[in-house]
Structure formats: C-alpha cells, structure tokens
Amino acid sequence: MALDSGGGVRGGREVSNFGGNVRFRPGRLAVPRSEAEVCRLVLEHRADGVRVAGSRHAWSPLIRTSGLLLDLRHLDAVRLYEEGGRVLVSVGGGCRISRLLAYLNDRGLTLPSVGLITEQTVAGAISTATHGSGRHSLSHYVQRVRLVHFDAGGSEVVVRWIDSGEELRAVRCSLGAMGVITEVVFAVVPQYRVQEQLVPAETLSEVLRMESETPLQQFFLVPHLWRFYVQRRAETAEPGGRLTDQLYRLYWFLMMDIGLHLVVLLMAVFLRSRGLVRLFFSTLMPWTVVTSWRPIDRSDRQLVMEHELFRHVEEELFVRRSDLPSAMALVEDLLRVADDRTWRLSEASCEQLRRVGLLGDVSEIEGCWSHHYPICVRRVRVDDALISMSSGGSEDWYSISLINYQRESAEFWRFAGFVGAALMRIYGARPHWGKWFPEGELRLEHYPELGRFCELVRHCDPAGVFRRGFVGQLPGMSE
Image (cartoon, rainbow, N blue to C red; front, side):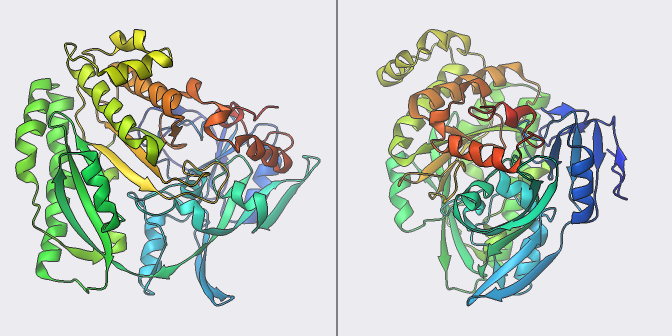
C-alpha cells in the first residue's frame, strides 16, 4: 500500500494487519513528519475519529477506523541522556524496536525487556504491552510518555508529558485510546548475554522447577508428541563469541526460523495432511532438536525469533501461575479432542466446562482441527500498569499462544474461539490486546482496573476522537 510520505492525506486504500485477518479502508491516511503536523491532523479530523497504525504486526482490530489513520514512521528520533543518576533513552513513537535495540547496542546498552519479535514500533509495542519471557512487559519500564490529546472541552489539542501517577500507569498500555503517543522514555540497562539450552520435559512441574536456574526461559507444548520443550535461558557473565555459539545461531535460523516453518507450510497449508502433521511432530521433529548445545549470545539476539518471516494468525491468553497447570491440562485436552473425535476429555476438563456452560458445545470442535504448531508459553512478571495483560495482583502471569498458518481456516477460528471462551470463563484469562480473541467474552472483571482506565481515557478524550471502533466497544468505555 502506498503511503503519502510528504505528510499529506490520502483515503480509499485498503489497510491490512500482519495476519491479514483485519482489512479495512480508512477515510484518510496520513504520514506526518513532525509532532506539530500530528496536532494539525488530529484537530482537522476530530469529527472523523483518529487511530494510529504502528507496524501492523497484530491480529486484533485495534487500528480499524473509518476516519483518520496515522502512520508515525517519521517520528523515530532516538537520544540518550542522564537524569538523577540513571541513563534513559527518549525515542519517537514511530521508531521500530529493532532500530532502537541496534542504537542501544552500539552504546553497550539495551532495554530491560526484549520481546520475541522486534518489528513493532515503540508506540505500538507499549500500547499493547509487548513482552518477552521472565521479565515484565515493555510497558512496565516506561518512565514517561509524550501524548497528543484533547483538552477538557474536547475542542483544543494538548501536548504534554505524562510521567507519574495513575495517568502514567494508564498510558503505559493505553491501546491508543488516550491520544497519539509521539515520544516515549525508557530506563535502559547495560547490554548482557544470555545462555540457552533447548531440553525436553515430560511434565509441566518439571518445566516450572527449571525456572529457578533459568528464569528467562520459555517453553513449548508440542502437539501430537504431547511433550514439552524448554528454551532454558539465563543471564551469564561468560563472554561467548565462540564458533559453536555462531553455529548455533545459524542452526536456529535455518532449522527453526526457516526450516520448521517451511515444513509446516508444506504439510498443513499446501498438502493439508493431518497424517503428515502428526507424523512430523510425534516422530520426526525430536530428531531435529540438539539438546547438548549451550550457546551464549547478546540478549537482543538470543531472546528474539524471526516469527515475522511467515504470515500467520495468533491467539494469546494470560493465566495466573496458580492456574497454569489446570489451564495447560485443559488446553491439551481440547487440542486432542479437536484432532480426534474419539478422544475422551478428562473428568476435570468436563467439570470445568460444565461449570461455565461450555460442555455441551464440545461437539462443535470434535475432530474439526489438527493443530500444526507448538503452543508457546512465556512467563511475564506483574506490571505496574492499569490494563496490561500481566497487571495487578502478586502472581506471575503465563501467556499461552496458539499459532496457525492456515489463515483462512474457519475450523481454526471455531477451535480458537472455544479455547478462548473456556480459558476466559474458567480462569479469568486475559487476552493479549494485539492478538485475536473472542471479543464477546471480554468482561470488566478480566481487568479490574479497566473502569478506572476508561475514566482517564475520557479525561484525555472527552469527545471520543481516539476511542472509536474496537476500543470504543470495550466494557465501561462508553459510560
């Protein structure tokens, strides 16, 4: 899609997200070159509604609008400075995370939290609480935000820094509802190295016991094998840089980032063979995993995967640590019954589904879907934010991701909708704001501070310029 790089406005062109599951035609599309131009455009189009597109690496309808859609790619300046004995980085909202990490690495620094993907823009990443594993989400580390919004009367544009109190907790993950984020300040940390080892595990309890030694780990439930594989990760003082470390990066890129996905595309998308999918994951895939390697590399390389290379759709739901064993057992049960209609759910799964009125609907997913990608699980520490997925309480949260490469499959949406409804009703699971989820299942009780967040949004946007579409339909937003 061609964008107006001169900051002018065009309309009528279709916009789609990374997954291709959200497509729309905004009334206007603009690429401002300055904050002043952002202010002018927002004021001119306040009657139409305004949303901001980041890198569009998302699956939820957050950016959909019939009004003005802004692309902040030119607001990408980065600068380091010291304040109160701390090193901070100020970065434009349109800067890509990958560019920011490269800038910091050149200076021996990095971000406190590095996510699995680095293609997002800074504003987009914090607006949906992008996260890695073993630390807080990126939103937690935001020190201040420069925001373009409206005054109390809703008629004049205001530009100001938000750096404290409930407003900061709100804007750290704000879904673009409070206004346009033009600049963000993060705390930074010295660049560090991470050692990794990929190992199998038979049980979830075995996986969780590993966390004390490898707190940055993430793990995968492999369908049809029904075994876990753990990417054990921990900071290390060892320098790395050995030939074996470099070979591991090549191995991971060729075998996992590229090879695994090509095999999945061949089996599941082009051939659509359930038998080949089952054979590969149950028998062949374990032979591709090297468990003896313990490579060391920089954090911004070791913690990142190249998931953006192949287009897919994704559902991601967060459950509390105390609910994880039960939730994972239920997810495995549902994966099995979706793959094999003769599979019998456990008594525990039946009772849980009966309690929330879903047991009678299991027949709708029986035999309908054979999952073709490992289920990724990551631990996220509690955020100091109002509505990030891991905000509130004292327990760590664990995200459970279902990834699908048959993007047009109605069977997957049926299955994912059932899983989402089950986890949200039974465990109060929170959907990732940037991923697909069954929107009708979202309740105020999923995010206890959502009501307060909506109040702060209305304070910054009394006329509802930024809270149109999906955001405007959130529980409590229209009150």
